[in-house]
Image (cartoon, rainbow, N blue to C red):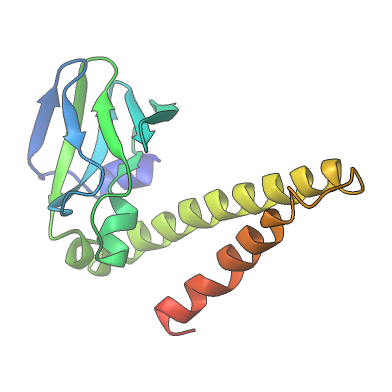
Length: 152
């Protein structure tokens, strides 16, 4: 993540206190943030998903790349310092190293999600009923729907 921080020197720095909101789910994506220090909590649909504290972590990158509103609320869990990236699409396009690292991070997330779903399906296969048949739908959507949206 050090490479990400190196690409951000000179950007505006913002500070947040615990419980301050950096971005709000469903609101227009105005900026992307890069975590310098502290920890943030990611909440989606009212459910806390994870806490992120690795310097160089990106906040709002999916919205920046997809041109969509923020997909989750991110709030400070501790005192937090971030770089604020205006026009994140342009910013990433002008920095191939950062764009590649962002793609790698997103690929890791997708790989983890699909591996988890495949493992869940394997664990519950043959238990009767079709309550886990939805996993096939989710896996299919993860692996094919995104291609159609991007033009693949």
